[in-house]
Image (cartoon, rainbow, N blue to C red):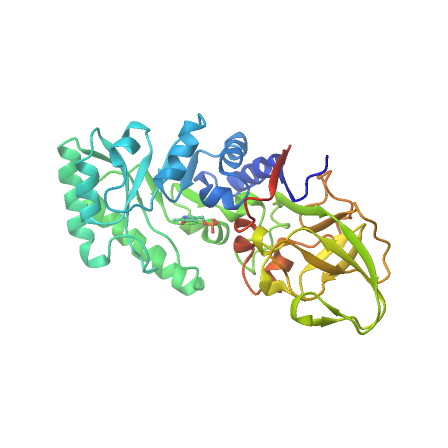
Length: 375
Ligand SMILES: *Cc1c(COP(=O)(O)O)cnc(C)c1O
């Protein structure tokens, strides 16, 4: 049976990407970030594929994501960093989940948990999201030393996160981070893992790699920024999104298509109905723009994206019910595709069509879409 909505995930691509990135950033270690359901690729399968490719660490945002990996039997080093007050810190300690800690209050809470928490102290070096602010660093580090001497915590890491606001700002953050490390050392902290860079920083700046880099989007074969060429780095996109054509009709010049008639056929044309819509993460903002390949021919969404379906304008290309429509992906290595490498759209093209970033395109692929894993 063919699946109605299918995301084919190449675990081999994920392993290959980690291997490739590991060679690029060595001797720094690699943390594969598999938060948000592995950027839509499936957290557990992505984590396993990343570990097979040589990832030293796994990273997730919150503890429920961390526990899901542990429940799946994954015992690799694992860091989680986004916590509400009253989070399950004792359970995290029991499950050997390292904790990213962003404030003195959070540090106290973790120190009060049962067992010895393994923490990575996060400093805000300019992003203004998580992490202790500059004026708190000294007290933050001193509190950590006190808790460590009392046997309540072990400080395994000190870390921060780049804003990717340009090379100059990034360089300032690298300097700020180095200042934080010096301050931590001066009060007696000896972290094994100093880490700052996500995909963009890790790829662009050797000086941002420190002991460990946290790689999300690049693990899945996609570029973290417009000025990074993922293919040139040897990265392979891991997800292909496709569905069978469920209806084909010939439409006459001048007729309107889909809700609101935002599209009128300029000439007689073939319209293919594809059962993927915004309920599956196809951005409605890509109405009239999103590219689709069927039988190696490029078409484009005609009219508005609906909740469950899109209409694809295929011109005079031959299309039959049951043919596979590919929205984006990596054709080589995927049995799901009937297109060729040159015509299948990329995730980046969809990001452009929807005026967003590739991260959002793959991460929002919905739960109705069956994930099928191929090596
Ligand atoms: C999501 C995330 C990453 C991974 O970012 P990419 O740009 O996908 O590599 C790294 N670190 C933190 C703190 C994150 O939240």
